[in-house]
Image 1 (cartoon, one colour):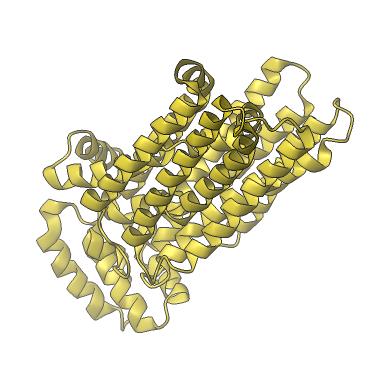
Image 2 (cartoon, rainbow, N blue to C red):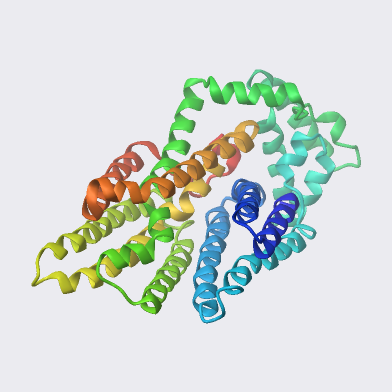
Length: 408
């Protein structure tokens, strides 16, 4: 996370001070790399330090902050739009460096993941961290024993169970735990074995990969990225031609996205993941149908005046339902369902799917609209959301209230 903050800080500086398109693009690539790091690490880290009772709420915080960041981007664009064009965009892009500094400061005071420490055979340190984040020393000891067992490769489970008993016996004395913990060392051979298991998966791992990658696919294929990036263009095509009005409505979308993810956070650990995902996908489908219908109204002179309001309403409705389920849930479930030895690489793989599809859709959206028309494009996204509903119902497991070791 510290490396990610440094890369983003440097990238924002390059963008803010750039004097050519090439430098601006370089800065954008650098910030993209840094954001990619944090996109994977943040939900993974939070999952590994959270208790089952609060994990859903806490893992949604990175998504909440992502939405706050998008909202701040909209607000800064709106506030800086009155400044001279030679400096307003520089300030907008450069200010992101302040957030990177905040991240760097926070990283210096947070503990390392206890699960990562166990994999590195630093068991005493893992126990120390667990005692800080558990409700009692007894709970910390039980969590450590579960982590040690889960960290073992499948062919060493019996040996691990014996080791766990030894660890539990020694937790009450001063014996160093590292010598009793036979977990994997995280070396190159182990990492290569993890990638082999992910790329040539067993039947159980296939199901996990299908769920994780499928959720990331539907999150982006639903059209959220293009709606965020191209909102002013979409409203303009629907008949909304005020520049300040475009920015104001776009800012409203950011507010709605942030508010509804905060609402969802309150129910993640009580209502569960699946109900919120199903509500989210139903609502996203209905919203995309409304957005598609708004462009059909342009074909009727008597109803054309309603196109822009319906487009705005459909867009706000879509991001609201998205933020109730698919927004926070893709990172949450990816961090939960992979077993410990596959988790880091598995989450990386699923996030790569997310970012790759987001980039592809962002680059091709205008071409898709030209080929299918705006109405046809949003009907297509509605169809994707409908398929996502079926996918969630048939594939996604409920993880509420279960420890990561139970899910493994």
